[in-house]
Image 1: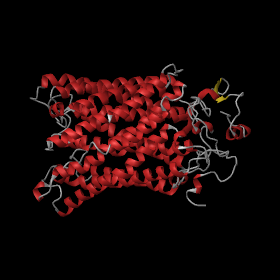
Image 2 (image 1 turned 45 degrees about the horizontal axis):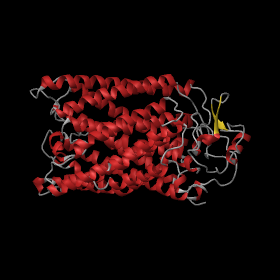
Image 3 (image 1 turned 180 degrees about the vertical axis):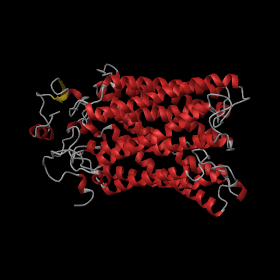
Image 4 (image 1 turned 45 degrees about the vertical axis):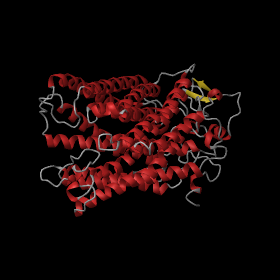
Length: 580
């Protein structure tokens, strides 16, 4: 059997063991080819990196409570915010949805038993682990104080006591390796979606989450090699003293910015496009209403992917570009708002007259809409030449970046975890605890970063470890409020971790379909069988919720008795499972 053929079910059969109990022991996990287990290993690893990056963030906020920055030296502060940014971007937000949730959900949504290349999938995970270890190595080899963008001349500075010399090469090597993990995952998902769709699942019958993952994979495959080559050139320059980016060696530091942002602006959409796919699923499922404007949302994902390659220069308005080039980049930047707005208005139209369930996933989806809208609107200030010159390198940029990346992408990631948690674990979490956790995270996030818009508009520069003598009477009250908000947000994340872990031990057994979803992952048991489905699933309209009804006995949604059931649902029922 070829690797691609392995993605389809070999023959109609019933698989009673789920993927959690199919084999036992640590080696059965470390050597697994099961996409669900690999997705869970990604999830645990990403959340571990998120914890580490979050600790660095709290240290940064605590440092800025007072104008003189009492808890860290300037060098320690530079290392702390550098590692916070690099870990959150490269180890958390970029792989969180595609590698973790995408690995788990994508094949089941397709009705396949695995991804196209299971061994490459496992290899990608171990590349991610190796890349993460290089970041840990940077901590013990002098630290890293270049900023998460590794801008030259900071990353090429050879002067003593900068802290950049020892940790830069391990960190750059780590990102280089992480790039291969991202490329391989993207290639795997592209082939899986092209080759393993079941009969009847045409492009415009796929769930919108798959459209977003597909668009993301295209960006990963096309853009990530540019970053890899750029960082390889930087390592060669540091190791052998060849002048590429270092001006003291005849290099051009602005060239590095062009290379870096040609990757990193598409990388913004590697982070946000999968988040948009999650929101498309959640709003439709938890509003129990057919998604509005399916084709417009699907094509807007592709449009965003295309636009993402054309706007990197808006990060460089103050870097000496010609006036004509900056005007062109500014105009294209505004055009990105069109496909993004298409999604937002279609989500709102989907909710109109819907039967909305105000559960934890839907609350996070609503929080996403609010935060993403603020992030998008504040981006207009940074895309406008006149205002960007004033706001560049201030806390306004920090706040905007976090509203789009952390607030939007990460909130959607958490929403997706809650949405698919019953499917992944077979257990339900406490809904009241989920609402409390959401409230703490949402309020804490907005208290933290709304104040930073005000800080930036008043001129507070980013990346400063102290602000003594810099209008400290104006800046300090905002920093105090922002830091207090970060503590609330941290409490919310900690509380969320507690009730999710607790659900593994005392949570109610999850039905096959607790939310009333119609895509294929809700038509198998919770957790899924080892091969996902007992028989080849039949494809229908994944947003037609009229065929389902609530069953009080099952505490979940089941197929209506007056509508013919698909054969895979009948097989599930005949095996003693939930017939939802």
